[in-house]
Each structure stands twice: as structure tokens, then as C-alpha cells.
Amino acid sequence: MNLDWSVVWQNSGALAQGVLITILLTFCTMLIAIPGGIVLALMRLSSSRILSGISACFVEFFRNVPIILLIYWTFYVLPVFTDISFSPFGTGLLALALNVSAYNSETFRAGINSIRRGQTEAALALGMSHMEAMLKIILPQAARRVLPVLASTWISLFKDTSLVSVIAVGDLAHNALEIRAQSFRVLEILTAMAVIYWVLGYPQAKLVDRIYKKWGVKE
Amino acid sequence: MSTVAAQIQNRKNADQTPVVEYRSIRKQYGEFVAIGSVTARVNKGEVVCLIGPSGSGKSTLLRTTNALEQIQGGELLFDGKPLPASKAGIRQVRQRMGMVFQNFELFPHKTVLENITVGPRTVLKVSEQEARKRAVALLDKVGLADKADKYPANLSGGQQQRVAIARALAMEPEVMLFDEPTSALDPETIGEVLNVMKRLAEEGMTMIVVTHEMTFARRVADWVVVFDRGNIVEQGPAAQIFDNPQAERTRDFLSHLGWDG
Image (cartoon, rainbow over all chains, first blue to last red; front, side, top):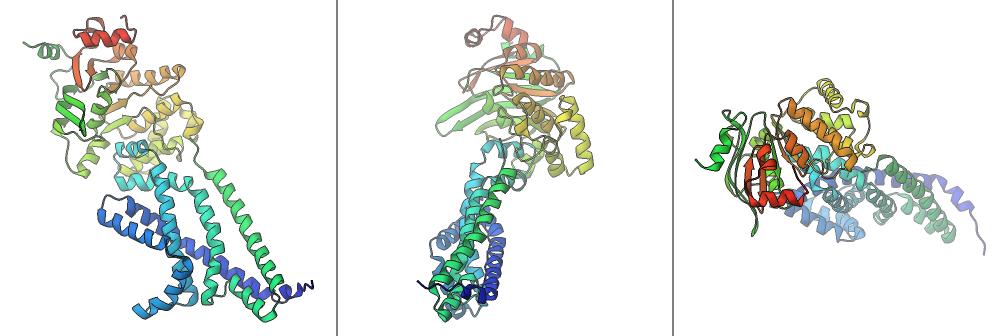
């Protein structure tokens, strides 16, 4: 077999730019999806049936639609119906944020439910409102408890951003696949792509493990 | 004159307005009657102990006092007024009552000091500096001044419960509710918690205490209420309940606990 790795170095600029977009997309998605997930979880757990129902519908819809379909739909269908159109990056960001918010909502909901009832009662007994008890006492504990789950969501998201390559967002996957198409160096480029994703993803996973060890709540 | 009326006549502070008054309180969970009909009062400066077998409704009654449980019948008066119906009204009442739980329920993500300051800071909008000052004084009072920056997980059960008492006192409550405060403790740390409670009683704090510590009830309580199956079988001064119980059920209960005076 005749391997020519020089194609990787020759295109290192495009690959680096792709990496940058991939990281930026992951970061921005989580920046929306963490508050989004918290808001959805609080709505779901609220005593208002309307809020709870809206949140349940949102979550069940976006959790059960394939992300790639969501990306296509936001890109092709949304502008037709609403006259709203985003740049490819904005479209990818929106689709991913909707999906990950739905997942995060379930994560936070499980975390909040895992904090025992007595904690809420202790906060209420001090005279706090339900909202104060939630924000000051329950949510901070729940967030620490679900940190490992959020971390694996983060890692999944980091890789799932590659799906936005289908609408020509210049992320790592898109740029790499372009180079592959032009150079016909399939094996080299796909291998390089795998290595780059792994090298970037693994330290993130390790970092989160360490954060959890440091900040996890001990009882 | 009925026995109850006679008992109440020779009661400490009997002339005062009761701080808490339970009038024919009823509490059900579905079909299950947790409290049948309970009438009792707690006067200012009194220590009232609620005793009785597990599941007899004493903890439930305590929890109705600050509306952690809703009552289905009767009337609950705090400071002469019925418990308000509004959420804001309930919060106001809770600010004036301190509560100590069986499982401490300290906030594990906050330091000891933060556990004590979070109530006054959040609810009473006390300044950070003022809240800290008060917390340090309270920690000193419960003998844990050196633990301010520790997390609850690093304290023993007895220490955690003393912090929980300090946390409740930080709100400067008019009455303290204790829900089996020593039941989750190792025997060797029970004493330190009871001592703190005893000192509090000596300072004149009004206290309602659900407990299985009969020695504590005998020594510290002004008034003891004996529960069985959701109803009061007997109530009276500690001396009467422990030395000369009137009800058969009280005698049974005390003898089961090995109480021999």
C-alpha cells in the first residue's frame, strides 16, 4: 500500500481552521444548551401544567428526531415557512442547541429529583420561597451531581458537530472530507481526522473527571 | 373540673398567650389517618416534648406547625393568629420558627458558615458582614467556632446537628421545632446535642421537641404530650407523665422503653 501523509501537512491550515470551528460550535452549543436545559427542567418540574406540558413536548420532540434531520430541516424547511434563515454556522448551532437542550433538560431533571426532599424542606423551613430553595440549595447540588453526565454529553456533542458538515459549515469534518474529495487520499485523511478528534476529545473527558473529583458533592 | 383543665391550671406561664396552639388538628394521607384530633398548646418559654411510639403522629404534628404538612381539619394558631393561607404568609411564619431535622439536612455544597448565613442573607436580606458576625457567634455558642470553614461531610453527626441548630437560630426564631434531633446520632454524640438544647431551654427559648430521649424529656420538658395512633393519650407536666402516668397506654409505652423513673 502506498501511503502519502504529506497531504495532511499540506492541508494543515484548513484542518486547523476546521478544528477551530468545531470547538467554537461545541462551546456555543453548550453555552445555550446548559441554561436551556435548566430552564426546561424547571418548567417541567413546576406546578404549572402549562409550563410542564410545553417543556415535555419540546423535550420529547427534539430528543426523538435525528440531529441530522434537524440540521437539514432547519437549513431547508425553516426558511421556507418562516422567512427566517441563518448562516450555515447559525443553522448548525440552532439545530444542535435544540437537541442538546432537550437532553440536558432530562439530565438536570434527574439531578434535581435525586436531591432528597429534606433539603428542600430545610430551605423552606428557613423561610425561602420554592424558587430560592431551588436556585440556592437544590440546583447547585444537582448540577454537581450531573457533571459526569454533562461531560459525556459534551464529548458526544463534540463529535456530533461533525453532522453540520452536511450543510457546508466549515468544521473539521467538512474540511477534512473536502480535502479527501480533492486529493483522493481517503485513508490518510480519514485517519488524520480520527486522530484529531480523539486527541482533542480525550483530554476534555479527563479534564471533566478532574473537575468532578474536585467539585463533586460529598455527603 | 375535667382532668385536662386541671392540668392546664397548674402549668408554667399558663396565663400567657400560647405561642402555638393546636385545635382539633386532623391530618390524613388518603385513607390513612395520621392525626385523628389533637388539641394542645405551647406557651411562651416552655419546652414541650412530644413522645410516643413510632408512627403515632408526633412528627407529623410538628411538621404541621410550620406548614411542611397541610392539615385537613381543625385550626393551628401561631402567636394567636391562624396560619395564613397565602404562600407569602406561610414564608413569614416559617421565618419566625426554627426547625431541626432528624437527618440534619445541612446543605452539603456550602461550608458550615455559609449554611448558617444563607437563611439570613436570602430571606432577611441581612448584609454579608452582619450575617457572618452572627454566624460566628452562634458557632461559638454551639462549641464549633473552629469548624466555620469546614464542609458538613467533614463533621461528625453530633457536630452536624449542632450546626443545624445554629442555622435555625440564625433566623432569630420565636420558637424552635426539633424533629427527633438525636435519632440519627451515634450514642456518644447524643449528649453534646442534648446539652446545646438544654442550654437553649434555660435561656428561655420556646421549644417543641419530638424525641425518644426520655431522660431529656423528664429533665428539661415543662410539658409532655403522649401520642398513640394519631391521638393524644395523655398530657401533663413532665413529673406527672414520668412519675405518675394516668393513662394505661402511657405506662405501657414507658415500660417498653425500660423507663422506671
